[in-house]
Image (cartoon, rainbow, N blue to C red; front, top):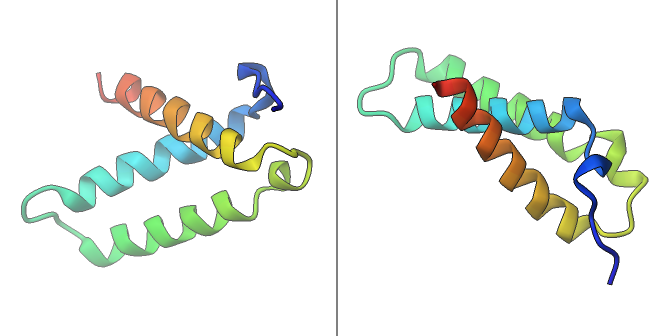
Length: 81
């Protein structure tokens, strides 16, 4: 099984994932403001994540996606501090 090195994930992809988590959290908050804007942003980020060029260059897509979610959550938490 191919190991996903932490350096394999491009920074812009991890930033997109972190932005996705921040947007999702804002939408999941009680009585969020601007729900339409947040939903559209979440959708746009999802599309950009799904079609990022990185996914055509890696053979370990499921493992890379799991690592991306992990790193994205960490970065989103760091940005919230």
